[in-house]
Length: 336
Ligand SMILES: C[S@@+](CC[C@H](N)C(=O)[O-])C[C@H]1O[C@@H](n2cnc3c(N)ncnc32)[C@H](O)[C@@H]1O
Image (cartoon, rainbow, N blue to C red):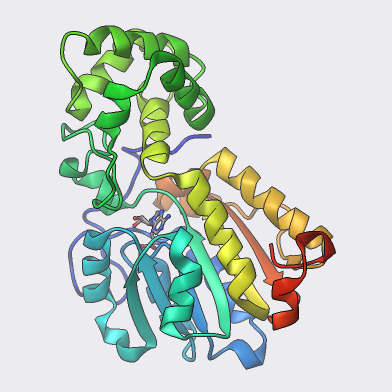
C-alpha cells in the first residue's frame, strides 16, 4: 500500500473554525479519533493529549472543539507546519501548547512541559498537504523542486544526498523494502548510470528517469515514481525508527487508562503498530481497542481521496506509571 499524491484534497478547502486561511489539511478519520479520546476515563478528561504529528492542526482543532476539557500539546518537527498550526489554533488560547520536536524526542518533551499524567497520544504519520503541495520542499514528483524531502530542515541529509551517494545495491534495497517497488534493481541501476553524467538535484528529472526505467505500464494506477519517492522520504526522515520511538514514548508516559491512537498510511507502518501493540497486550501493558484497523468509510474516501489508505489502531494503557515499573525488565512486564 502506498501513499499517493495528486489525490490529496487540500488548497481550497476551508473547514469549521478555519478562519486563518492558508493551506488546509483535511484530518483523516477525525470523527473516530475524537470518539476514542471522548471515551477517556473521567479522571483523565482534563489531562493533556499529545498530538505528536500536529501538521496543520486539523485533528487538534477537532479534539479541542469536541472535548471542552481537553488540552493538547502539539508537536511537529516541521517549523513551517508549526507556524501555520499556531495561527490556526490561536483561538483555543492556553488549551493548546506547541513544541518543535520529533516523535523520538517525545519522552523528554513531555517531561520538559510537565504535563503528566498524559491522557492521550495521537500519531497521524506521514506527509502533510503543506509539505506535498509546496514544490520547494521537494516531496512531489509532479512539481519540480529541489530534491530535498526533509520534514525537519535542520537534518543534515536530504534526498539528493541519498540518490547521489548511496551505492546501487543500497538504493535497490531501499526502494524494495521501504517503497515496495518490485522493479527496485532496474531503477537503482538507471539512477547510478545517469548520475555519472550529472548529479540529481531536482525532483522532476528523477521522476522522469524512474518513469522511463519502469515504463508507464508497470503500475497502472499510480505514477511510476510513487514508490521510489515514498522510499526516499521514509529514509530521509527515518520514519520507521521515529514511529517506534513514538510508540515507546507513549507506552512510557501515558497514564493508566490513557489512550494511544495511531493513523498510518503505509502497510509497513500499520504492521509495525499492530505488532508492537499486540506484544504489549500479551504482556498486559495495553488493552487493544481495535482488533482490526479502523478504515475510512466510502463517504470519507469520496470527500477526501487521500484518506483511502488510512488505517487507525487504538489502545488503552493498562498499568499505572510508577517507579517500580521503570526498573522492571521487559520480560517481567516493564515498560515497552
Ligand atoms: C499527516 S501530517 C499530520 C496532519 C495533522 N494530523 C492534521 O490534521 O493537520 C503529518 C505531520 O507529522 C509530522 N511528522 C512526521 N513525522 C514526524 C516525526 N517523527 N516527528 C515529528 N513530526 C513528524 C510532519 O512534519 C507532518 O507535519
